Length: 442
Ligand SMILES: [Zn+2]
Image 1: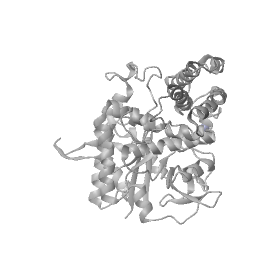
Image 2: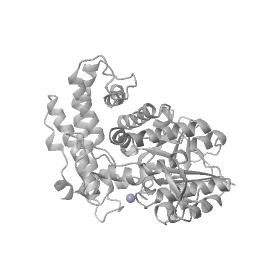
Image 3: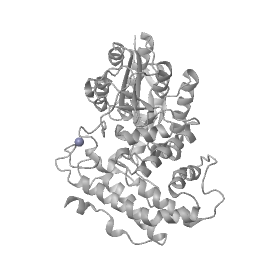
Image 4: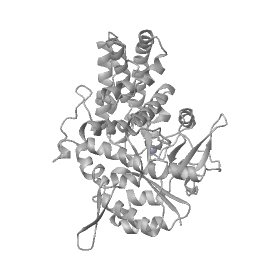
């Protein structure tokens, strides 16, 4: 009899205007105001209370799927839920608490804060993305995260070292990211060796059921899905886009509820990664292929070069990466010495702490706001420059075929806002370093 772990990666690209903080109306999401509202109604909220329907159409049971899944939810999505769908935000947190009370290990794990591709980040940005993700998690869930989802499961050795440095115990990777490639046995986690002699645990997910949910319509039949999962051995675990359950696949929430109930009837334990790790500490060592990710078969090309993924012509991708890297360097050269002078502290460490200011702004005071007790608007402005220049590396900007689409436009708007904030703070005009859609298409 196996144990089953169903991981949902819940994420939406940030949609807020960098000028107003509000999401402008998205007509394609009608009848809803925007896609966050629509996907919340189709997926995030229904998963809290998914009905199981009997033979005569009557509801025979309701399942809180969040208590049985394993999951990561994007910090920027949770921030939106906190403001716009508090019942869902709090329901997700409560589900983690309930599951933690049962097994001692919660189903929720953290995520890199702005969904940047960690192997493509500067060392300082990588650390900030991880630290902000972990701090945001702890503020919302009231406990430390045991695991962290690397956006697009993109990893290399420096990324894994940075995770271990922050106390992260495990991450989740695609089977092809293992040193053995697709052939790796996925029924138990491995210890990935780090150069300094430490290890970090990696769960290489089972590709077949993960593809089954994403592409092969396993969610047409939740009972059948349960029987397929129950036929495995050891730990059967899949990694899926959480939005599969109700948004990408209509009524996928109900199929998942049926699957969970059927697994229970079959006596198959449904577990989280943390629970499994505590009960079955890994001993087998396995390296990774690097840099690699789950949605590009060329490493991390999809976010840095014309690798062929998702578009006929990806020549704009390296231009965007190089352009934003050059803008980053110019912004840092001007702003970091000023943050150091104004704060009297290491500016990178001070930036790492700035997440606590953002949390306090949201009404989640952690007591660690680095600006508490400082009436320093100039310093605050410098940190907002950094916040926006971090947001411009959100991976969605590279993912799709055309740089004129919503997602690339969004990260260019963050870049533009960062440039404006530099001049507001008395710095140089960096406008000519801003990539443009026209320039990317040349
Ligand atoms: Zn690729």
